[in-house]
Image (cartoon, rainbow, N blue to C red; front, side, top):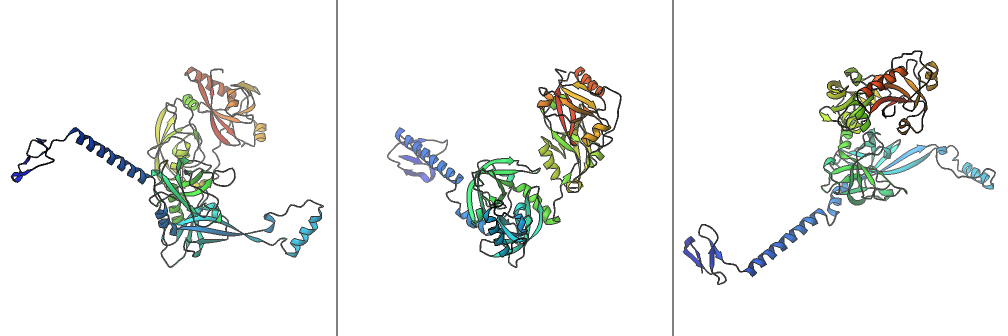
Length: 508
């Protein structure tokens, strides 16, 4: 019998004795070893069932509900362009062939000699607002005379171009309609993880609305653009998918399908979607201004390497090394060639790519703090950003000119060098006031050759100091050696483009 002091009730459980498990009144039947083992097995079974339920949630059994939800906002895009007849392919007929006259007569009969013709192309896109804004790729609608947007319902509307951004291959279109259109929203692409499920939808190979699913294969891929931030996926993407959306399982757009890597033109499971966090900034500017307005710092830069960091005394291999400062915001703020930009607007700079993207995403006209490393010390400069689009084609700042009567050629660090003169300036198409040392020959077994230096290069700085004569270079080498440095940093220009090269001093 088990005693329950509450209300003086008495109960019997399985005919077993009772034992007290708390300091108060409640008591239970004493369990046997067999009963305890049974309870443990039951608990383990429940835990296994729960784990299976969680795993099934991670891998959906079907994407049908998601496809039904987002399909009305995805569109097919057809473009047409009028081109001259001569720009298209024509039959290849050997000269003198008996078929030559036949094809000429055929073209004459059909009056196709110089008559323009219309070509069409297909792509994809998606609606981002109920009033008819549509996002697609720039290459889908580039040079198009007519753009037709086909909706999932079968309705077709003509679209106009609001603005384009070739740098990210994004275009914003607008269709006019009296009815509110179904649309999708952008998600946060930074939350997408490698291994997450994603779904692509579009118009592959002109087959109409088609869905494919896969996972995020990689993040932060860079192809060829300055502002590239691609999500790589193995969801099938083919020609015609360009401009279509890449969805997460919440139905948010986290990428715009843009490119594939393929030896045969078809999907092999390596597709690239421009990250939504890049696209949203571009779309907002295109909607507001009809064009992009990116921040511009006004420097030429390169990554910091191990030997460059050692040559200038930088403890950490990070930042962006300034190779040139043309007229612009950076020059006005006091940034100099040879500075290493360590921070921009409060953010650490890991490399040149990170700096370019950070600057481009910053508001034009904003004054920011830039932390630079110069001559063994750091200092903070204030820079008011310009607009990159308005600054294209800026001419680099001219270098001072100094000439002296030195030997015609001198060999240093495996390089045969000669001071710039009017004759060499003319041969290299340099400005009349350009100064430095010309590489007239190079030892193919030297470190300089291994690092890409070639005859015709012009060395304008050594140890972050300007050069006018060979003596200047030897003085910089001597100073670096006395300071215990293992290498010296050279600023080298080729066809006007600057870059830094660090050469070892051990064999000098």
